[in-house]
Amino acid sequence: MRCPYCGAEVNVSASPVCEYCDSDLSDLIPKPEPAADNWRTGQSNAQRVYVPGPQTGPKSKKTALLLCCLGFFGVGGVHRLYVGKIGTGLLYIFTYGLFFLGTIVDLALIAGGVFTDSNGEPLE
Ligand SMILES: [Zn+2]
Image 1 (cartoon, rainbow, N blue to C red):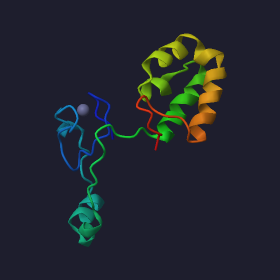
Image 2: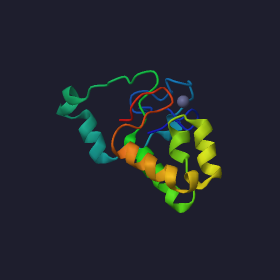
Image 3: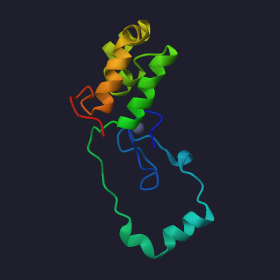
Image 4: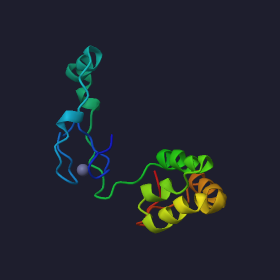
């Protein structure tokens, strides 16, 4: 899930505090269900490996794709804001995704895996 304060990908079940902005996320921890409890206290602990993400976590390709699709509903550029490309993101928003053309191009770039975030990192 995402930190509502800084937008970073956080693992609240591993730590109730956002490792990026130190916000208390304990309110966001989902209430454990009986099945989840069994799983947590069961035999499968060995399979649970906490993998700390890189400091600037890679953005989700799927999320970018979904946000990009908003462009077809007249809200272009949200995916660019999402990956940190604020300038072109705002430009897209005010121009309906460069009049849908930019949205279509970006959709192809994201789907093709060549769309990068503001750090030049490919989406994952
Ligand atoms: Zn945060």
